[in-house]
Length: 232
Length: 232
DNA sequence: GGAATAGTGTCTTTAAGACAATATTTT
DNA sequence: AAAATATTGTCTTAAAGACACTATTCC
Image (cartoon, rainbow over all chains, first blue to last red; front, side, top):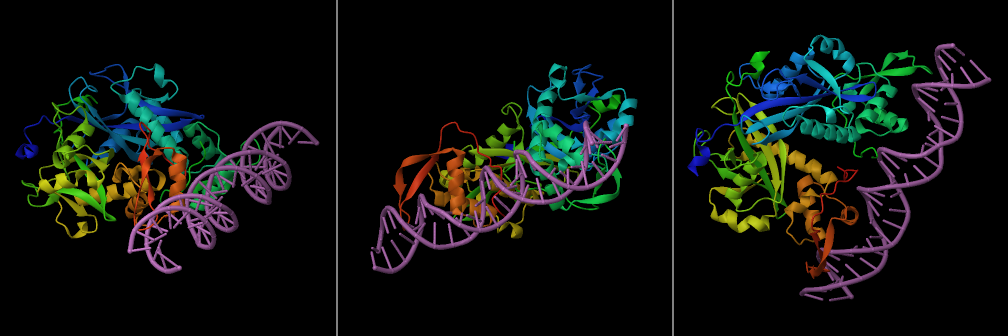
């Protein structure tokens, strides 16, 4: 029993933090990926992430944020733990553990920055199957996508893929892109109303037809969750 | 940029796996805790867990299971990742990371075994606030409890706190204990019916009044999730 | 006016809540 | 028969779906 507590007896596994940063561009869900410069898997695309720096990071959330900031120039508005992926076979260097996060950002907010960092790029989730991806990162993205889809059914998280001022039409498009199914505009409006998370921006925006009301998230509100899912 | 990938540059944080094993005994939610024998926090109660053994464990799920088996003599029927807890202050030895799991078991299945392992004990969640607990394990249990409560509202996971053959009344009691609120027996029966997860056991059991039908989980069914929550 | 998009009204559907009514078992 | 618990019947309620209708803007 003592051996359970002997800190030096076991090889400490390789521990990293990786993030799946999603954004919606032109009704397509995209993931931020970086071209790996060194082994293992040099030349392949991988998730932005890396090792904890115990001098800089208070915890792993900060590691995830720091790594994303290095790639995009900003901290994502939504960041949440996904799950741990671990095993003997996922990294050729040995038993490894990654604490995976998923995050959302409005592409408008980072677009210019991404373009200047040539190693980072938005990849459409539709192109992923044909891409050479490092480690089990394809699998991690798949799990993150499913989690995001589920969350979009009972919460307002997709707003974090919208700009600060957004229309119902924009939010509807983001949600439909994420869950890959159309939803009723009426249902969305009811949720916007009942969530009490949003306020009018005193401005409308034209869009080919009748101008649309702009909304923004109220100051210091928490994310609304609903008791029912939207239909799948 | 190269520094991000230099494996030797950073101190690898201390990595452990800890589990919150729940069971319901006499309408009270209990957590399995073990008395710590060595520092840090010797003498305090802590969650069952420990370091990954890369020679024995294929992944961290197995680490969680192995540690629980050492304490209870069996593998829990339900085991799921909770989240990672990390930081510079949670362990006096330095930056540490724990991948926390939560698990469910029917207390009938492990009762005798627990009694023989004097270092492990069921602790009622109501007694926890007054208990000297190691690390941030009190906080981890709290988060696990909330996650379990949420899950009980839209899934059948609480069945894993019931014995193999159970009655609707037993399941109702387990659910009510977890979510700390009464539910409608009718609603539960509708879910049992629509989930298609269960089958009759050809036997009834007396209980002070009319005998109750016994149910069991069908072979190879997956956990049912519902589109709505029970009311809170 | 017509096309396009935004927003509302309202009826239907679905699954949960409430609770009365019936069934079975023990004492 | 009374008490206790199990099970069913059925009406109500809450929130989503469907979809027609109105509103606004540009051409």
